Amino acid sequence: MLSDNFEIFHYKDSYLKDVDLHHHDFYEVYFFISGDVSYTIESKTYALKPGDILLISPKELHQPVISQNKTYERIVLWINCSYLERISTQKSDLTRCFNAEVDKQTNLLRLNEHDQKSIKSSMLSLLSTSKNEAEYNDILSRAMLLKLMAELNFLFLDKTVAYETESNLSDVMKDIVKYINDKHTERISLDLLSQKFFISKYHMSREFMRHFGITIHRYVVKKRLITAKQYLAEGLAPSNVYAKCGFSDYSNFYRSFRSEYGISPKEYADYSKELEKRFF
Image 1: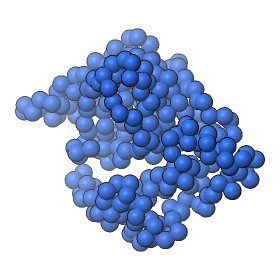
Image 2: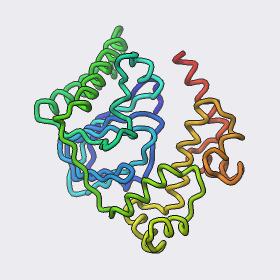
Image 3: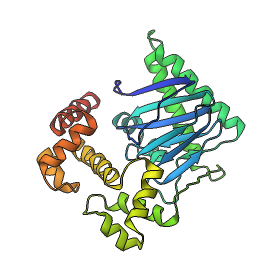
Image 4: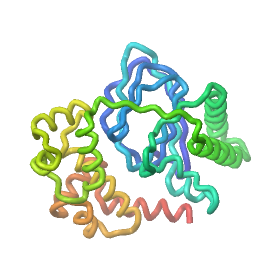
């Protein structure tokens, strides 16, 4: 994400390469228009229907599985975390719909036809206005974004909204993923998970790879790195971050961070400081 506040895109593809499990440093609003796509977010899998909306937080690892037999069309809105917090108010938290820690929350909004059209129209209007550099369009774009996010939060809080989720993970595998998400900063090994959940570590490893496309070890490292980025953004020194995130030593943390993100922990910390100055 290059902008300090938000970016919005309208994509239409007839072919895409496989997308790896990943996360962003920003909030994502994903409006699905067409295609044959299932979307994995953490341990949940959503078989998408046209008009579905996904709300994805920076903490969540996610991955689309795209069939190539249909045109894949979607609108994607990325919002800088600090920016969305800044334009919220004490009474109205615009980040609330992205709160992955709310009990029984899913990431999917499956709306009625009227609300689908309203959200799609708002996103397309925001797209058009944000691309126009004419005077006052920056203010108009901000107003449109505020309106859109208020509407999404209203719909998120509306108890009549239908949430649907499915997963090909067994219950025990869901419990394992939840355990990793909750305990990833602590010592985790295949033997520990096998003993705790009474499952063969070989079967567990195969099931995990089949669902996520990466090993359990790699998943744990990704979760630790997400937490590390949060600590670095909060101003904690890189030399103090690695142990809080479960890494055995700084050199291992440094190599993992640079391999994943292409920059060093200190470079990311400096970037986060500079970004924070732009808002405050």
